[in-house]
Amino acid sequence: MHNHGGIAAIAWSSSQRHVGDYAKRLNASAYYIHYLLPQKPILAPIRYTLQCLKTWLVLLRQHPSAVYVFISPVFAALSVFIYCWFARIPFIMDVGGHAIISRKWEWSMPILRFLANKARVNIVDQENFRHLFESWGAKTLLLERPPLGHMDHRDTMRDKENFEITLISSFEYDEPIELVLGAAEQMPEISFFILGDTRLVTRNLLAKAPRNVTFTGYLMGDDYWDRLDSSQAVMVLTTASNSLLSGAVEGMALGKPLVLSNQPTLTAYFVKGAVFVEHSVESVIDGVLTARKRRFDLARQIVELATEKRERWNREFEKIWTLIEVEH
Image 1: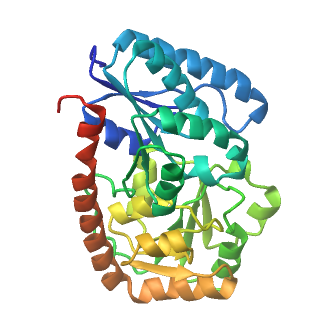
Image 2: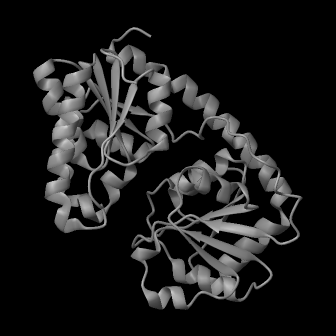
Image 3: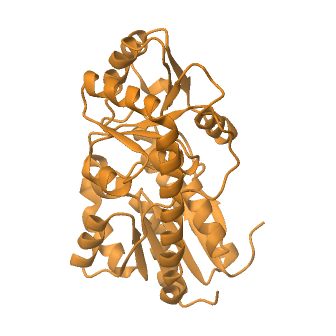
């Protein structure tokens, strides 16, 4: 149910837990606007046009006092800006790292810069992004990606003889999946689960998987969280130096030891509870074995880190109310 007035939260996706958390905290009505398959770029002009029209429709119906919009794509914020300009209300732009660092969206940086200077405040989750936006003269609030709200989860550290690790993947160009398959082949005693839509993977890659690797397909909702919860560690890898992986934050929220790429953004954020690996089969093997050996200590550390991050996020979040000038 969406209340008339108040704050509207917009995301151009079928679901977005990050946006749901923000909407709940802002007491906002959340709208997930999504048409057609995102995997088919040829349909993008039609998809974005439909989503733009739908955005305007839901905002016209609600008549919000302010709008929170998560991007990418940048067109989500552009459609919100147009509405807010006519309605003379402020909007908050929450900028996912993908919109800034992805090669797919490099061409849209001038549009992003324009919108950043029109937003009442821009939320970014990394210090280097804050410097970029401030160099544009845009009002910026650094909110490191928070762990999700409290979720019930089982203690899976002790109830399984077989060590299970789940790799969170979307099969993007920056994910070294083949290294994981190579490492898994040399660790038959460990079960690997690889998340992600297998329609995006070549048959050749699937054929390379040893018997201890399971491609789960694209999991949503409880199926996704149950898979992570059943694991004794979570792995997320990227070759991108500035990517703060949401999968790693989700693993942290469940108190799972993490195996992550040795990238500066990740090492700066996950100062506890994580094992960092280079992109080689040998390093991935060492990282997984270390996570298994130290799983109890790492689990304790990651819970501590989640608490620290959540408390800091709560303090910083309160600044939004002053910036958008609406009553709390």
